[in-house]
Length: 285
Ligand SMILES: Cc1cc2nc3c(=O)[nH]c(=O)nc-3n(C[C@H](O)[C@H](O)[C@H](O)COP(=O)(O)OP(=O)(O)OC[C@H]3O[C@@H](n4cnc5c(N)ncnc54)[C@H](O)[C@@H]3O)c2cc1C
View 1 (cartoon, rainbow, N blue to C red):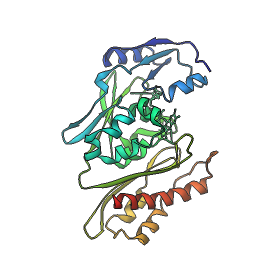
View 2 (cartoon, protein in one colour):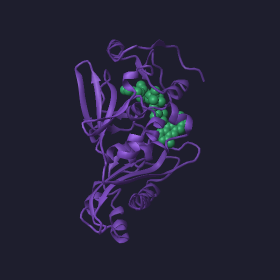
View 3 (cartoon, helix red, strand yellow):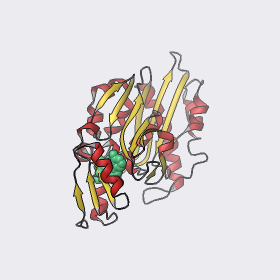
């Protein structure tokens, strides 16, 4: 299908993008890689009157080390993240997650800023950025603010970004000494996670869990941290029984969603299995 008519703007600077957004806040949509927005427009599920194409803003396309953390601009694509030597060596969970997003076209065009701002509950990256306790940088007319990942995702397709704010980047801690893995159950045709689990853990030479963070996507209307599983494993020997018992807590207190892919009961079961196997995958390196 063909999208409805719209005015197109390609701002040359972040400042210009922000003033265009403020001036058209009720009618405008920001365009980054277009992988979510364009299909919605073609289906006429989104009918913005103004498009603000930020794709040319080089200042939002970077991956670098800043004060011991890894900073990634909103316009970095999944391919940029998956192939970055800095990310692969200092924060491999992000690369492990980015490399399984969609297909090669989606990874080459889709940006991390677009993916996170869109907040589809079946996207992969939210699980990783929750497990990493990432912070997301928003800039709007009142200046910039950092939003902790746990406060960013509100519900399906809804974040704590204000309408006149742009997501300009994220920062994550370097994960030296940690092991990590991301695994998901998905339908081959699309790749979206029916269940996706990101694990970042630190264990002693004897196999005792010193620290663990688990992000879960696809299961509920918003990605979440499996805090009960984490609490059950911290300080414990990471043997199969302990992992299996802890994994059973993953959807405790969580409303699993129902859709064409899975019933809530099946999703809960998958979540449990994927927590177990992703912890094992992280430990195995
Ligand atoms: C065939 C297909 C398969 C896919 N499979 C997967 C998959 O397996 N896993 C997965 O996680 N995802 C998957 N996706 C989704 C994909 O990851 C997202 O479409 C992509 O990340 C969105 O980023 P974008 O740059 O294309 O955003 P756009 O489509 O340009 O924008 C998406 C939304 O975010 C807003 N936006 C964009 N950038 C910003 C910003 N900087 N600040 C504020 N708002 C912004 C836009 O206004 C729009 O509402 C798939 C998509 C397709 C088309």
